[in-house]
Length: 170
Length: 184
Image 1 (cartoon, helix red, strand yellow):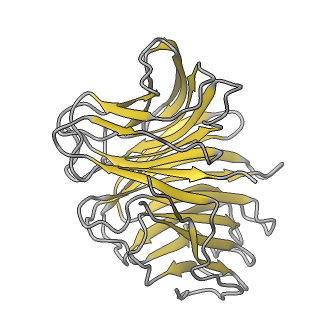
Image 2 (cartoon, rainbow over the protein chains, first blue to last red; image 1 turned 90 degrees about the vertical axis):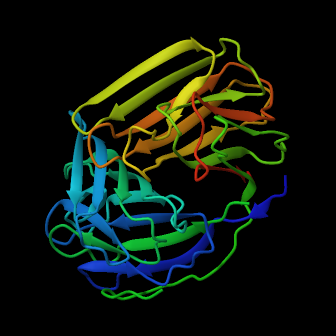
């Protein structure tokens, strides 16, 4: 077994001012998986963050979510949607209490629909905290070369960070 | 990389770290439901297996065993959501850890199950071995689920091989990639 070092930082974006969305483009196909690590908030409302791949805003997305908010556990699904979520629990303040790690699996193959696994948390003491796991799918076999992260409502807050890593299999 | 909206305050490009290493990758053949990583070196602290998978028939559960042990030495706990309800369960005295998943022939074409499997302190000979798994199958409708699982192998032996078995065959686009994570 030959081992090769991987888990390579590709790019980091830190918002210097509130923005409606964040885009990663021209993503190299040199890796097997992508990992997106976020620490963020939404400027005005509690909300969710969704993702679209390769500029596709058609009804080609779906997701299944498992969540717990401290008193209730549940699951929801979206089908034939025009976006898919990487985090439901994003808080509205400037404390940047929401974190998520999204694994975009085998993003560069041209054979399979693209799946991702995401884990998110809003670690607030008072602002509707919660934790979640999400599986999502983009029904397209094209290699992912770009994606856009957008808040459902309002802007993503100043200081939010987004770091993209690439993992290459042997 | 360039943002369409927002201002970049910092950027990092192609800075390679050495604590996470690719050890081996195995692809499905279409004629076997067994993937084995063997001769795993003990030079790492943790292992991670990342996979997408689909079976050629109806089998969608991946059974994980270590070091060829098929005795009743495994246990699992899991928490899942199927799009409508959340549930949990546990099983002890198992002959494998059934805590990873694929899609199957009954699911939407070209859809694949995804798994990230963490195997903690796999080379330590002083404790039983534990796994943590994030799994998901989304098929744009009924049948999809996301699951958080833990697995236990009741052996203090260092793990040197891992077998991931589906009751039916893996498609050729199925892929399992094994990585090693070093401690300080």
